[in-house]
Amino acid sequence: MKILCIGDSNTYGYDPRSYLGDRYPAEVRWTDRLDKCEVINCGVNGMTVPREQSRYISLIRINEPDLIIVMIGTNDLFRGLSAGQIAARMERFLDPIIDMGKPVLLISPPVLQYGEWVLDDDLVEESENLGEAYRDIADRKDCMFADSGEWGIEMTFDGVHFSPEGHAVFAQKLEEILNGLNESEN
Image (cartoon, rainbow, N blue to C red; front, side, top):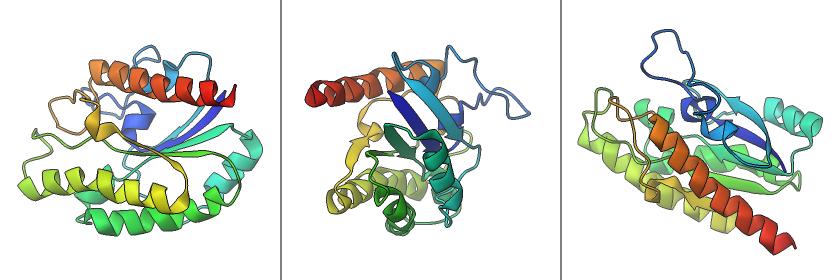
């Protein structure tokens, strides 16, 4: 299965112990741990929900993936947007991508945890609300949905980025979803 992943630093595989934006090694990153999948990792550090889709529409046309995974929203929270505002932006972003007829899996980011980057109760609360807001989009748009906030993803000291164990758990949970998709196709 060929998967195109659109996301932020947790998709990119950012290692928060680095100072220059380095990534975890491939064997740690969730995008490189998916069995029997060719993954096109379009994760970008600091990415917010894009206002413009043309780059991603081009990437989808060029790569012809079997599945598109989208997990963005955490950086929008840090820019002061509410879960509702982020969801509205996400819906506008997804519309033309869904219209392309490829299966889309919308994943809400894990809930932020208190840490060096997360000190505000409101930030944690809005990150908790993002899962339900994204679930509503998926229901309306008839695309697949997963709430990684329910997966117990371990974060690092900053409260934002996946630890190596968090990447392993994320990959395992995503594998379960992908296996379910493969079984339903057969």
